[in-house]
Image 1 (cartoon, rainbow, N blue to C red):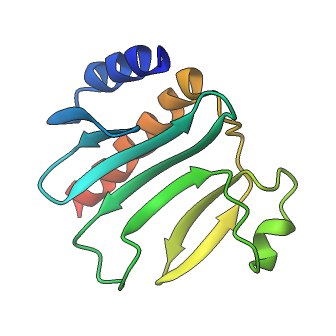
Image 2: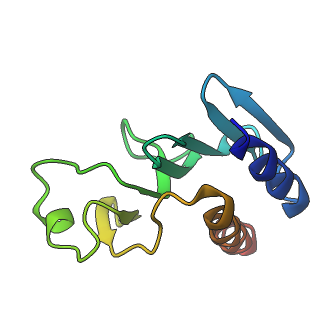
Image 3: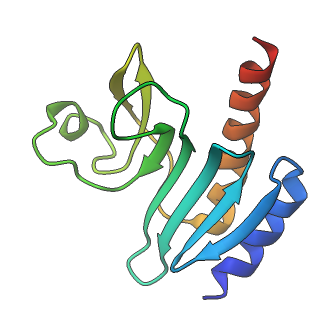
Length: 129
């Protein structure tokens, strides 16, 4: 469980989260009342999911804005075609999921910095509109 310490510290240092907490086996970094980053990580298998959630999204069900994970999503051909399958980045484009190559491989202590950069970029765009 030592991975939590460095990840929590980096999230705090980012200066964009109002609250950072452990909920069961995941880390949740809260941006505001409806937007938060959920981090699921298994240090034994290095399986991971880093997802920005926005409860105000108009899409039914899944409220992820974007995220990275290593879940194989069986039945989705676009993911199997990716070079790094099952590792992928997914985001919404006009309501549909788009799957892209990802450099993430479950090295949470170094990858968290890239996740924070993407969250900051998203928030900059969101608040400038």
